[in-house]
Amino acid sequence: MPRLASLALLLCGLLVPLAAQDRPNILWITAEDHGPQMGAYGDAYATTPNVDALAAKGMLYRNAWSTAPVCAPARTTIISGMYPPSIGGQHMRSMTRLPSSMLMYPQYLREAGYYVTNNSKTDYNLEEQGQVWDESSPKAHWKNRKKDQPFFAIFNTTISHESKLRTRPHQQVHDPAGVRVPAYHPDTPEVRQDWAQYYDRVTEADAYAGEHMREIEEAGLADNTIIFYYADHGSGMPRSKRWPYNSGLQVPMVVYFPEKWKDLAPPEYRPGSESYRLVGFVDLASTLLSMAGIEPPKHMQGHAFAGKYVTPEPRFMFGFRGRMDERYDFVRSVRDQRYIYIRNFKPHRIYGQYIDYMFQTPTTKVWFNLYSSGRANGAQSAFWQEKPTEELYDLFADPDEVNNLAGSPAHKAVRDRLNGALRDWQARIRDLGFLPEGEMHERAQAARSTPYDMGHDDYRYDFERIRRMAEIASDRSFEDDAPIRRGFHDRDSAVRYWAATAALIRGKKQDIDSPRNPVFRFRRELHEALHDDSPYVRAVAGEVLGRFGDDQEASMALETLMQLASVEKNGLYVSLEALNAIDYMDQRAAPAKDRIAALPKVSTSGPGVKGRMGGYVGNVIDKILADLK
Image 1 (cartoon, rainbow, N blue to C red):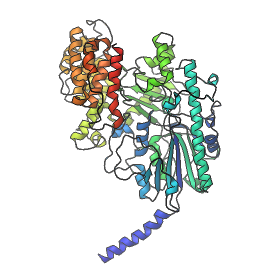
Image 2 (image 1 turned 30 degrees about the vertical axis):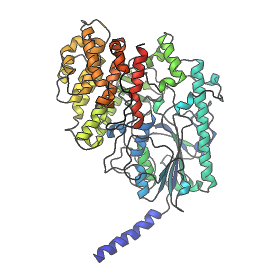
Image 3 (image 1 turned 30 degrees about the horizontal axis):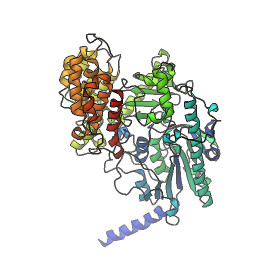
Image 4 (image 1 turned 180 degrees about the horizontal axis):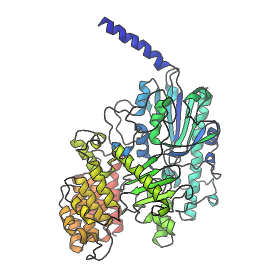
């Protein structure tokens, strides 16, 4: 024992100098809801002198992606170094946890001797297990560290958040007349004011960045501090935020490495330069650890682009969209240097599903009203219509992403290459988006594990079989009903869910006896599905029969959906699925109007339920009742 104790002391003596050795300070300055609309990126309309100056002495990334087009899943990507669809954190406002063997990146930094602070937002879809930050609050600051202790500090501003774009009154700084209105937005005074106000807010975010950079200089730390500036996803304007287009995912990212730490800089780093490397938020944790001299753990799914453990550039970047507040969707995207490919697994849900929060923006309202009155052109109308299964855009020729090339014979090889990359990625990360949200949590609970662990268990999650049915379901050109019919009787409830969704996707308002009517094609299967063991299957079958069946079937479907609609009796996830289905029944839901009005609107109980999710049920109920007046 004495010899072992002596050895332990010797090892400690060797480790202490290593932990205390000189390491760079790292400062992240982050802003919310803005894309690369900055002077350094060539936008002459923008006023961003501080970040422009940082880029002039540092380097900017032309192809930086947030991975998720909305804040909570984007931050989940960063804090974990993993794609949220692989850990169950892909939905807006939800809660899951990592396996016990995995830590959040600040914990690895703390173990290495860093003082880590976050001022002032967490907002990720992951439970904090153990101490994550030395301090996370509006008072958190690198100044509170021990003498000579290296620090990692985040300062985040909400001044450019979506909510700030619509606050009135507002003292306009940028002239609305100078705005470039993207092709998908109508050119109206309201839209121009929102865009101009957005630029005003980006200027304020730039000023915030300048304050924190000056603070570093005044403290005499500029020569020892690596600085990053980035935003959490694209602009807060509709069809940017919440959508995994390039417009929703591309962010500014400017980095500065002082001379002392140039050996940690990216290989292509030159003062005042640009990099075209593909970098995503999934890469940030690995890069941060690499810069701190820590080898990124194997479970992290990103590619370090700076530091001791830098990796080769990836060929592709990936994005995703899940539930957005009270509305369900399932979209995945992938891009390379030139093209972006988008796969819509629920193409029957229009782009512009009604989300209460989004409709508070003036642009959203005027845009929808113009479309509803028939005054929007084709590019402007697409947002309010059902989606194609596949989308492909040439970002060089079509930066607004309005000319879909997915059906172009000349681009078939590009589409197939990107689709193949997306499918490989989904298989590699075991994309959990193919499960209904509630069922994902239920399967993890049944296995007494996390969604990540459950997702890597073929017994609990038969990924390939479920994905195959989802691909068939979402492809309207798939004409063979036989595999869909078999899917209704599959032993796996997720396969049955996608078989019912296949019928829903093929639904059109047409004669009940038409061979193209999904009820005509799958009547027996849909009637049986109304009594399925899975409430999610029952909800989808109820929507199909409620929208496309005869009057008697619609009445029967409405009754099934009402039995599922109470959040107190069925939990948040089942209630949301059922209420969304009722909402899409339109006036066929009128017989249940009084019962809908009597439903409870708030519940925060259940697996994976995060506080602000509790109000989503009420949002759908209010929308249904408003439409039934």
